[in-house]
Length: 308
Image 1 (cartoon, one colour):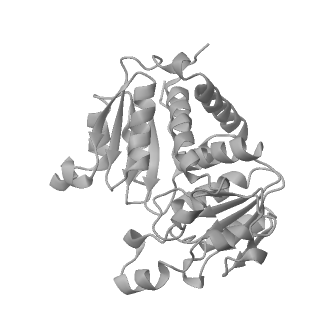
Image 2 (image 1 turned 90 degrees about the vertical axis):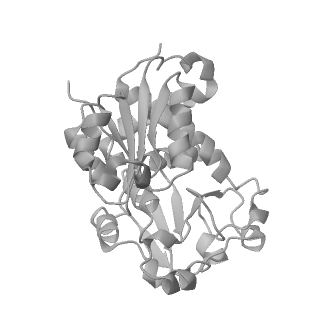
C-alpha cells in the first residue's frame, strides 16, 4: 500500500483533523499509554534550513513514542552539498527510516520527495508556502484554549506575506463555520493575493488593517503574532525598516479582550515584549508543548498505528 503523506493541512478532512486532535488530547492525558507504540521504528528529520522547535519537536515526539531519530539539521551537513537531488535523498532515506519529516527552503520540495518515497513524508515547512504541522499545533492549541474551532475571530499580525504558518492556518480555519479574520500588517507584508481571493470566494469575512491597537483587537478570540523573517528578505535595509513595526507589550495587552489568547509560532524577536510572558493570556509556550502532542498523533496516524 502506498504511504500517506502530509504536504498541506488540507490533505486531511475536517473529520480527520478532529480525530487527530482527539488523539493528541488523549496523548496529553495518558503519556504512558503511548510510550512504546513506536518501539523499533525510526523517524528521519531532513532539515535543509535551520530549525529549533520543529526539528526537536519531531524528535521529542518520536522518542516519546519509543522510537528513534536520525537525520541532518542543515543542507551543509547533507549530500545536497555534493549536488544530490531531493528525489535521490528520499530514496536513500526510505531504506533507513520508517517516516520522514522534511524542511526545505524551496516551495514544493517535500512534495517532490513524497513522489519518490516509500515511507510517509511530512512537510515540516517549505519556503514561504506551507507549514502543516505548525497548523495542527495551532489548531490543537486553539481548541484546547477556546473549546472549539468554529465561531472564532482570529487576528493575524506581522509578516503575512512570507509567513507560511499564517497561510496554512487561514486555509485550515476557513473550513469551519463562523470564522472571520483581521489581517494586521504593513502594506509591504500583506497576505498574498491568492489568500485574499480564496477568502472572498468562500464569503469568509476579513479585514486588512495596518495598526495594532485597541480597536483592532476588540472582539478577537485569538491574536496570532509573527516575526518579520530576516531570511525571506533580499536586502538588509528592507528588513531593518520592517522588523519592529509591531511590538505587543503590557500596555497593548491592558486594552485587549480578557478572553483573547496570544499565540506565536516562534521564534520571537521583538514583536512580543518579555513583559507579556507573565500574562495568563500569553499561550505561546503552551503552544510549544501542544506541538509535541500534535506531532505524536500525526506520526501514529501516518504509520497506521492504533492504540486501544
